[in-house]
Image (tube, rainbow, N blue to C red):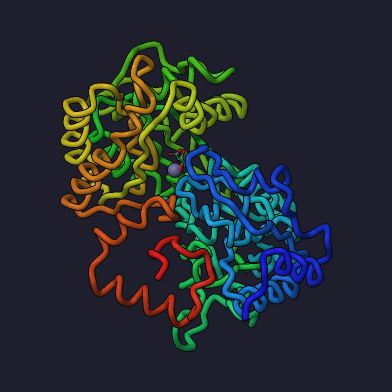
Length: 475
Ligand code: MLT
Ligand code: ZN
């Protein structure tokens, strides 16, 4: 016999304290709409536990009552993964009060952070200890590390340091039913059976609630060289990346592709951004080399490599950054492309990845398809070319009708994702599946993969309370 809605809220209040359980529409509203304004839900309550023990109590209660639980971090996701469905039966579990850095151990090059820590807070804690935490994404001032773990976030340093998954040494997770997996090890080597923690990374809260993680740290970055290089096409980007990696002793930490329209949009809409180079070029790459050595001559190295590329026509023009202010301006240009896109209306987003070597042919083919089939939109393809990850977005033309443009999303997505598949790529590189790409996973994952994923879901969450309908269809 399950409880009525009101009684369920009362039980949650009894467990957590009245102030930790929100149910007034105004208080709940920020947790029920994603930041793109595309996924809206409803909830029985928004709960804000203060401790791991309280998270465990919530999951024990919800499992017994068969209440869906939607973990919620900084609400910066693109796929609606942190938003409940419209039924009003689920609860949102905000991790924002679990926001302590539990430990920083510079000697062990490790750090333990709770899920509700904002990413910038984790970076700062490492820096204070003279170490470097390399995860870096545009939303780092508001996204939370629990969300980064749950979506296996990528960002601008993946080329050198890997995805979030690669930075994790251990996890603490509350399971449906309330048991706690206490796995905050900081060991580098630990071959003791199945790697259980890896299943929670990228699971988007469908298997349990990550409450804390131990991470590997790196030596503090002391020298950087940054440049913007203009190039003719994506093939030149791939060639230049290969050359720079070899010439620099693999010091390339970021290699970001920017299309001409990315420069135009940011210069038009973002205060303080201007076009760094005098000419009009089709494509640009923002490349950054970095080192933990103070006396590493990275500027000279980058300048020499770019000059050689210029003389061969691989690079058409380049601007080397001369100060921290110039560097920040260049990164601002890159990181505000999504915001600048929003100023010009809706966009159809595709977070795709391909083998790096396949990017040139893919972009040539897919760009031609967009030009022909989506005349009401413009391609804004940018991103982490060094990882083979492009944000292959299509922005509506200012003259186009927003609703009509958005109505084409499913058809455009199908064509682009099918092309990605043909080139051996993935429809979800770093933004996850959430609730908006469940059908894509069903289409592109193999039957064996889907069977295994469903079996894992059943094993961890037999009553299906964890983030129902995200990643896998609710059964
Ligand atoms: C970025 O790299 O800027 C973000 O991951 C993505 C986006 O807004 O498409
Ligand atoms: Zn990205």
